[in-house]
Image (cartoon, rainbow, N blue to C red):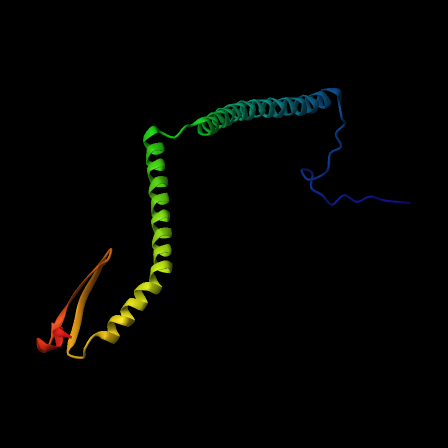
Length: 156
């Protein structure tokens, strides 16, 4: 035989409550109200995010359109008349410089041997008492400048 001894005081003793329809409907009503509140807040946040997304998409599209127009203008641009004239002038100067450089190199290649032989011959026939300081060649004329220790050395 079993005997039960209850050691709880009267206010701490567990009370068995039965689930009634009123209590069940109250709990379900609270849960339903919370669910509706969560859905409303979620929909409100979703619409706010969607609107912000549309604004940003429109701004991005506008920037992309501006970029496309700028690229098209850049591809269609023409240099100014002043820049074209400066370019043609610089090209002409470059061609003139190249031509001048070619002529100098041709002159040096063709004339260097004759100038060298002339200087060798001049060094051989110049007496020791004469110093040449400058000379120039113009066609068939040769102009010599220098100094001598005495006038008799010039006669030679």
